[in-house]
Image 1 (cartoon, rainbow, N blue to C red):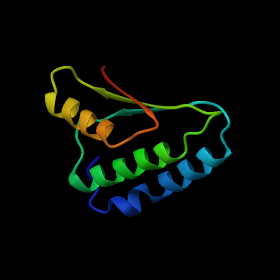
Image 2: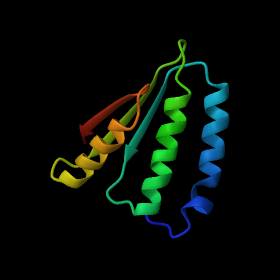
Image 3: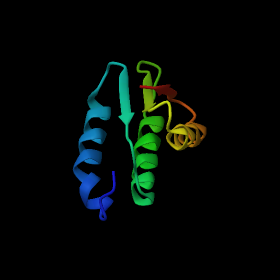
Image 4: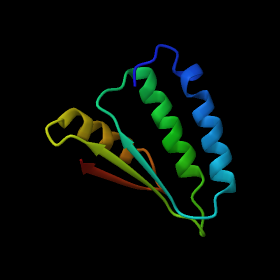
Amino acid sequence: SYPENTVLFYEPIMQWLEEFITSATQDIVFNVELTYFNSSSSKVLMDIFELLDENVNANRKITVNWLYDEEDESMEEYGEEFAEDVENITFNIKTK
């Protein structure tokens, strides 16, 4: 994920995700499998994780699976950093 204008690029995705979360009644699993992302994409990813984290409720569990290549230690570390910033979602860090 390396678009220069991440706000423009991710805006439709964020809108869809917000609508989906507010109407979904079932558990949600959100898989993230990236090989690279730039710093502005990092901000958008955190926005997504915060949105998911804020919308956990008693009737719905939200799980994020951060998938990375086992040889890519930096992607593993990024996943660990994102996981530290959320409280309510289950954040799994897994090799693909």
